[in-house]
Image (cartoon, rainbow, N blue to C red):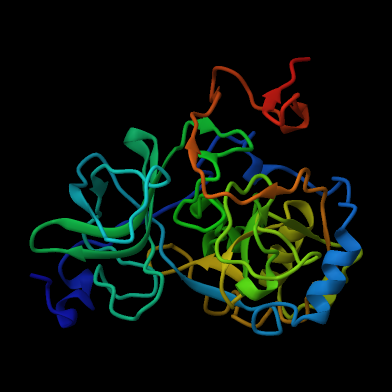
Length: 351
């Protein structure tokens, strides 16, 4: 039996506040931390940006920020709860193992661990002692029986550098594109410190995403329905270097814009609010007075370009899970050395 919502609405009254997740979550040679400020522009960039501008631009018509996703950090004492797949669970894309649940935490958009608002209800927990990142979608928790009900669990190994095929070609995750979510969220702590050192998650309505195609580092697509040249899942857009940062209303917005110029934004899922930041519920710094939901509204789709996306990959839904080949401290991954072998397989080209 679930605890009453009135009790779950005030987790701080029951438990000490859990720690907020704080990156970097993967080795620094991972694609999420790649400086793409000098990367080549994709041959379709002009057509993609023009199409997106002609068809509504960002999901709400302007660039806005969603602050609802929580990232929690577990420790060695955090209990692991049983995972019970929902009827919509699918394998082999999704993993089946117990999930660490920090006391006093919350799901995305909720006040506790009960999914009441009809949203995506992501649960994201970093577990440094096991070097794993647990990301779940469409999740609800039975607090009385310590049971986790979810539509998908993606377990990421934080000490590994994943290749362009991620957890597996044609495989999804807690996000439609098959990405991890946590390393693409920017936090109030990062913005207050003056630097976001990673790419940023962005989303578009599925009718504005190219149908049945994705590009690496995505390994999957959601329910896109737009024709070419709409952007495909996995597209990495870069804010143009000549964008006038002084038109933005505060330094917080300029910190985000500089990250979009250096690391870009990655098309990760379907939805309406373009950018996703980490909730400040458990972070040291708070968003109030630092960055507001519309402070980046001056940035238009036409202020971006799409960097070279590589081969367009048809979506087949035939997930084939694969293990990362680079381990931190063993061999460094270098994405400039990836090439396409005969037959279309990705191989690491040795120097």
